[in-house]
Length: 421
Image (tube, rainbow, N blue to C red; front, side, top):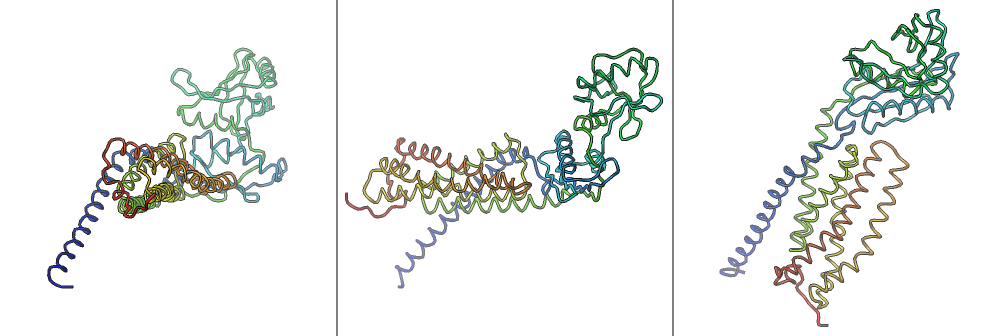
């Protein structure tokens, strides 16, 4: 080919490339604006796991003593006590596992490693003694422990169970004008003077100037004493810099992946692809909002689950659009093709997503730590994608048809051949 024909073909190819570049640029601009104004603020409110935010890694080992030998039951009980303590400390989604006689903990967001390690590994044996050293009550007699204030000073508020209330009333009755020694793991923490019998089943531990120290003691007492001695084998902090690097790379991967998916849908499915892209943005907002609402912890595998669910989010739209195109090629009207396409694709969409959700449930209930985070984000993404594909996409398509915006509907849906009916 030469002369005017080649020139015309060149100009046509140039216009096609220019349109593709323009569409890509518009997608980048729209995606960046959407990310900065909607997605990024939601991401800032998400809890971050150990691999993203940093935190504390602690390994405790059970050690036999004459009073408390190490057994499987005692280590299991110690793990439960530690889990209770960590939850009371407010650590978001910790990972606590047992390996033989060792308990391995990963605590995201903990910025005081020494104090946290001391709290979770402390035996926390509380004892009330008279001046001669005789034990009157122990932590087993407690029903609850909390923090409060006496004037401006923090205090630890103790509430005894029924048996403990009787013992405490008897102890204070027999020790009026004497001091009762309160010890924790053999260390004296308070020695109040008894001025009158206390029969209400409540007591206070004073002498604290820092509310956080008082709260930590309340955590120890509320969770109960460890049934076996635990030694700290190792403890180290996880740097948040590693997490920030992971976040930056994950953000880049998300932007590239989502941008590529949106560009493909737009170029291949035309108008319906544009509607699918809008539904994809709605899907992203729903998924992130649900994660914030349930206070989920986002880990690096969790981010991978989110990115994977983006591809699955358009999978349902692809099934629907292909069905619609088949109906249009068969000569149906646009409204009829949309209605039939959705109804025929629905069973396939439900079946494919149901199998994924079964795998998600297995991973969530039979694993722990980052794998659970991956399954959680993937599961939420699958449910959100089903909702947006079945509801949002259909509503937008129907709205476009009813508004009269669609003129050459076949071309806009990428259909070039129509068979006679």
